[in-house]
Image (cartoon, rainbow, N blue to C red; front, side, top):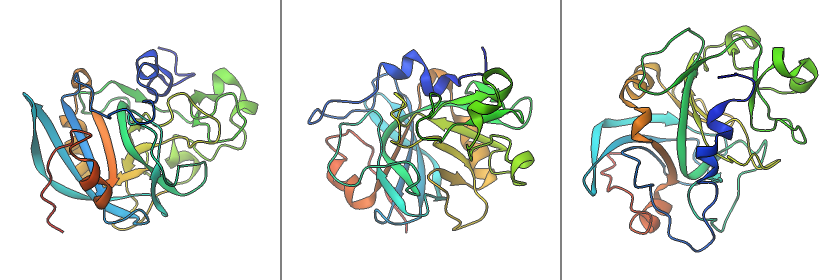
Length: 253
């Protein structure tokens, strides 16, 4: 598979589940058997708690224990995924908010040649960038500068080898989140699950875990389980849980 355009963000599979029509009932896809849920205390909270679930028959069973996560520095805003369009603040490029809603999880990525995970894995090189530049024909896509040319990645702040570009390991291992799978210009780009820089240190719009917790999640996730990611403030989760067929959560905070 050519790395020029990263499959989880532009695949035909994702395109089949782009945006549910307003007013329709959201539902975790029937073929999804794994769910990662993040809850925050309020829309503007930059941290939250994450939970893992497996579908057993028609019920969700929690796996492991809740774990702290870091969110966008400005909290959450509605993203574009599998859920119906919602009223309220919508995610836009550069707002510092992580997307709220229901999203498919794509491939894992990282610095090394391989990773312990049941997801497909794509190793990143110095030439890989996720394009966050509005107006770019590659917006919200991860490309290889060696294939698309240096001009195509100019201005992007998302060099996927952060160790080489920015001197940190936040993208040493991670997962692509299929937010804005139609790559609508300006609607938010390059959303990942990745390593945090420290407890309580917010992100630019992703969800970040401590490395041991992310390792456990990566090893647990399976591509053929069609995993999904859900992020919501606690109050919104309580309002939508039954309609969206989400699992019950006992939050120990």
